[in-house]
Amino acid sequence: MKIRQVAAAFSLIALTTAAWAADAPVKVADGVLVGANGMTLYTFDKDAAGSGKSVCNGPCATNWPPLAAATGDTAGGDYSIITRDDGAKQWASKGKPLYFWSKDQKVGDKTGDGFNGVWHVAKP
Image (tube, rainbow, N blue to C red; front, side, top):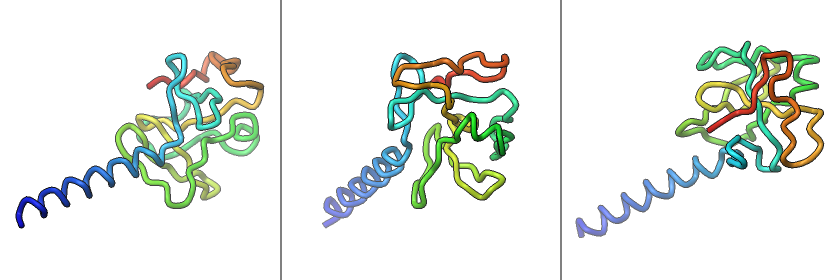
């Protein structure tokens, strides 16, 4: 009986771990983080890691769309979810909010890297 209980507990742990890992819509390609759509993700130097905030709002967020977290997504490992000024949820990696760059046109583009000296491709 105890063996079954232990096996069930391990199964539950494995399922829970798989669930949070699957929620983060982030992959690694060419040594950088990309969204589920394959587009490059970026971080912003003006965002303080671990602050739980994004300082890229309004027109900034139009040019640098946040990587949105869906209702029911759960964070884990290096990935967390922050709440933006407008109440929307956004994914962060190692405490830094993640963004797309509106001028990247196709998978593999990294045209936002180094923009104004404060935007950088997100690395795992």
